[in-house]
Image (cartoon, rainbow, N blue to C red):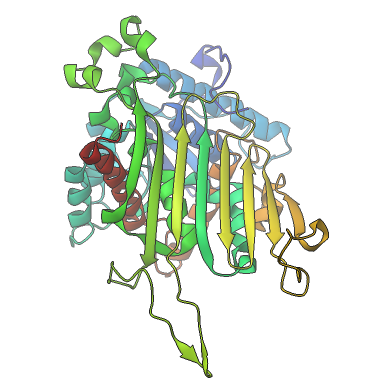
Length: 459
């Protein structure tokens, strides 16, 4: 079960071991972590950090005391679960991290932090990065890294600054979902990629403190807040960049959340007039054309016909993508679907089913009579069950395997982040799976898709 789904009774913190001093030279060899933002994603990270012997959490920072209390409970619960699973190398009791309510107080502890997790509300990510990247630490920052063009441009400039000495890894958990990882490994089997469709059918946004996720100014709107994961996957799957200026989109607003306007204790009354007047996007279609990342000629969609060995070749056509988002589809069989079609076959990944279907197109010998549809026996199908996360990712080391909110993908993300930190410590180059530039590319697609909707009045 995800760390903060269901009712958790916050018991007295006196049952936990007293706070221990945080010493640089304590000889533990553990990576000292701090969590900035202890809401749903912060708690998910806490649950997985608790499952790795070489990590420890020294600081929790959040202005909302109930979030801090719940995070301590999650830390204790998952620490005890790991003990029950035979992980006897851990201490017999959990240690309470130092609890802070202000980011500036946490910043004063920077010399006692090896790894900072930024999981605060989206609109705060850029400001935190601008402060913390001046220090020689590793930063795992949740998506999106920015929610506006202004924030995007500040981070783009930051990446060129000599004073930026932190090592940044942008959290894109969807890359590590077992079924998506399996689909990625099978891409060579389907020939040249031509179409990518990503569909999410889900429930509306959950309640957040102060209703910040209902405010376009604080989220960049839904296509930034929710869909950065998907725009990142489009780039990862195709190996190509989006033609940003050619993005097209349609959207719907105002279908969800109307009943929340007068709710007490949720924060809707704290929202400004503009946030109330312009509701966030509830559903959308986004069309994405791609070009090769090294191809600066945006207009070169169709190559000229070439002659090879006396025979003309078919002109190549561009790769195209489609994102479909519906946030009032709680009853859907699949919450996420990723479908990739190439010249030789097709791959389909379904969640939460966590399976991948591979279809091979019949060749001319198998389907020789083209006046009728292809016989069923000549369309080859293979199904891959991706329920064993360690097997799918080829991980033999011990790691936490509870599902969380992202099908255990956050645990895999942490596994690779730890490996990356080890390589860097041993003299290697910092090579994050998801760099700040990757995070900014995903934001660009979300902002431009939203802009396309506004400019063309496609709502």
